[in-house]
Structure formats: C-alpha cells, structure tokens
Length: 482
Image 1: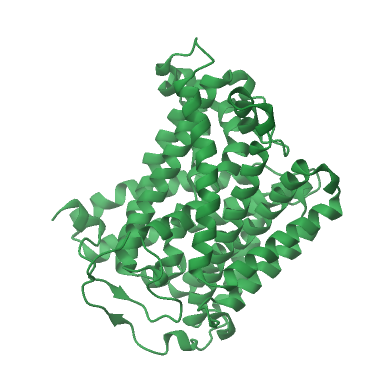
Image 2: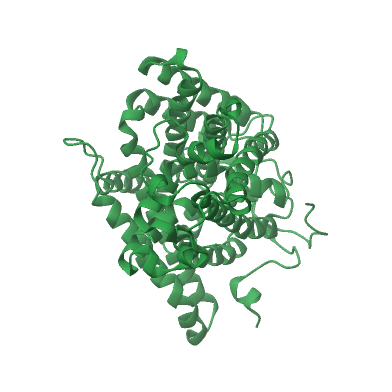
C-alpha cells in the first residue's frame, strides 16, 4: 500500500458525490485554490501579523513558518485529504465529526465553523473600512466606518448571490494583486538587499529565535498565519472532479500561503532592519508592508500599501461569507438546521444562508467596531481551534475504522500530537483577555458557541430537498480541467 493510498488521495477521479442543488462542476483546481487562498487574506495577515512574529522570534521568523507548516498544518492537510475522500461534503468539519465521531457533535462543530466564517466577514469589513478611511481621509469617523463596512458586506452579498463562478473570479482578481505586492516586496529585499549585515543562517536558527521557548510562541503565531486553507472543502459540491480537485487545492493553498509568507518574512528584513519592523504597529497604515514599500517604491505609489490590504479584506470577506453559507446549506440539507437554509436561487447559490451570514456580519459591524477588534480575534481563534482539533479527531477515528491496529496506531501519532498543539493555541488565546471589564476572553466565547451548538443538536429537523435523493456514485472522471 502506497502513501497516497494511506491518505486516500484520489488519483483517478473515481469519486462518490453527495446529492446537491449547488452548481455542480463549475470550479476547477485553479478556481478552488484561488477561492480558498482568498480566505487566508495574505496581505492583511502580513500587514497585521508579520511585525508581531518578528517581535517574538526576531530574524528567525522564517523558521517559525517552516515549523508551523510541517507541524501541525501539513499533518492536518493530509488528514483532510483522507477525510475528503471518505466523506465529500461542503460542510467539512460538520460531516466528518457527524460521520466518524457523533451526529450531535457534528452539529456542534458545524455550528462552530459557521460562527468562525461568519465572524471573519465583519472582521475584514471593519479592518477594510479602516484602510478605506486611511486612503480617503475625508471619510473619517466612527459612523462613516460602520457605513463603509456595511456597504462592503452588501456588495459581496450581491456578488455571492450571483453564484460561485463570479465569486471565484472576483476573489482571484483581488488575490493576484495582493500576492504580487506581498511576495514582490519580499523578492525585492532578497534581490536588492538594503540590510547587509544579516546572515541567512540566522533566519533558520533556534538560537537566533531566542531559544525553543520563543520559537514555540512564534510557532503558535505561525499557525494563525497559515490557517483557513481548509476552506477549499466548502467548494467540493461545485468542483469539476470533486474529491481530486479539493485534495489538490488543500495542499496547494497551504503550500502557497507558506511560500508567500516565507518570501515576506525573509525579504522584508533584508529591506528594513528587523528591530525596526518588530516595533511597527499596524493601525491602518499598511504596517510592515508600507515600511518595505517605502524602500522600493516611489512616493507616488505609497497608496499601494493601503489598497492591497483593502483588496485582501475584500477577498477574505467574500470567501468567508461563502464558506459559512455552504456549511449552513449542507447542515440544513441533512436536517441539522431549518430547511430554509438549504434553498438555492436561480444561480444555484444558497442565498438564504448567504443572506443570514451577511445580516449577522452587518449587525457585528455596528455593534463591534474596530475598537473591539479583540472580540473578532478571540472568536475566530477559538472556533478555528475547536474545528481543527475535531477534524483531526475524526481522522484518527477513521484510521482505526479502515486500517489494522498497527497501521492505525502509526497514522495516529502525529495527528494526536497536532491536536495537543492546536488545543494549546486555544488555551493561549484564553489567557489573553481584551480591555479591562470586557469578556472578550476566547474561553468565554468558546463556551457560548458550544452551548448554542448543543441546543441546535437537540433540535432534530427533517432534511431539506437537497438530500431527498440518495448519494450517487459517479463514474471515473476524464480529468480535472485546470
């Protein structure tokens, strides 16, 4: 048995599809990859996170990304490759936990993932509004920021309403621009360094990071930067060769994010001294992107550092809306949410679910503006932690169901350690409360989300029309158009 057989990679396109009323066969590997990478929002994550990573591990920021990529994120990716093969579904964590652990737990974790995606949308809206105001100072003001965020949400509701092809196309346009800026500035630093006393070996030195303790802190932050590659799963019911397309995209999205951030982590400190980068506070000014852009770009192009974060927020918002909506769609289709969330429009988009995510996001834009940003970070962190740990647990259960005890034990070791690492991320988030008097501690949010999901688990409903027909095995596909 080969490694590819062990992880369940679909090499021949012989798949089993779930019955769906979504727009089947519309996205190839390229489309799914762009859509999922848009959820990662590289420019905004780099602007908000890279300086913090430099402050934690100094020159060794690239090392933190390498460790985070190989463990636990690549382990999670291989587990998802196997889960996708066994249970192709747009709901991801909901389906895996429901099928391999417990149906009630599936409802709780499906709800948890939906909350995560639905929270990313307003978070990117309030950050995008901040950058719009920085680009156009005449729009300054709290009320104006809320209006801008609302307009952004409504705009991408309209895009999402028109179906998955337009959504992927728009996300791709935004994504190409931000990748060019983030990676391009990194390449500028590598090819035309302005800092000449930096040894390349320091970039991958534990000693330069300040020891294993500091590297551990950087590792946990690296996980945040590489997260959300799993959103490729949400488009499996609209992919041309569902399983193989998504399996490829999972590995591509994670690896592309790793390369993009590594180029930035390396090149930026060759452009600007790392001690200066580590002190930059992102406050709507482009953060370290602006600092590096000022070195290589003329003053007339200074706006690029702001504009690229706006486009990044737009891509992240758009894909988060669609990811949350597709999880709600599949949960509704299988009777875990009211049937109305499974309805699709003439463009075969789950428009009620999309509208619900957007409405939730607009409410948060007005109730939780930029000054309450810690609320968004805590909510996204704890819900991602719960979702990732649950998917790893489902994969472990699947290994024991499908393999002999010896093989299953071997396959379990790394996912089990990955669960511990990811749970530690959640523990660390819970140790970082927000403003005095505010209950923005991730632990409180996690308990609230799980409690609501538990109530939903006891409210069994009739499946919607989307799964009134049986699961259909399909013939071997001729290939995945690229």
